[in-house]
Amino acid sequence: MKKINVIVEHSGKNFAAYVEELPGCTTTASSAQELDKNMREAIAGHLEVMKEYGDKIPAVFNGKYELIYKYEPEALMSIYKGVFTNTGLERITGINSKQLSHYGTGLKKPRTAQKEKIVHGLHELGRQLLSVEMR
Image (cartoon, rainbow, N blue to C red; front, side):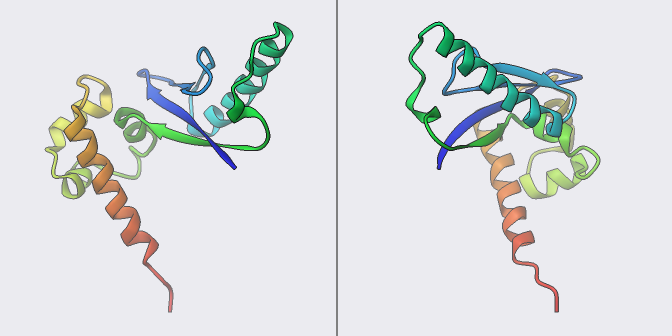
């Protein structure tokens, strides 16, 4: 199954997303669940219009494909703000909680190195959570 990258950003009140493999295909939503529904509809509509105009459909859209959501830090932090505190994120990323707050509100954009720390910390947390088993 082919993988389609969907980049998700947070614009203060809503989420905005676009498809890397399909320039011009965008959508917005107020939640991650709504974003997935809207994105699927946006892709279908975009491909339909391309067909009507005789545009070449990117090969990746021939057959089945899976949407892979790639979140910018502020979008991810907005989605999980009720789950993760900035202090908790500081512990797993090594980034100061005040700085994380700036990233989460969009006041500042993290540099590449900071994004990598956030991703690494969350991936490490994910690995630890996946190793949990019940007895």
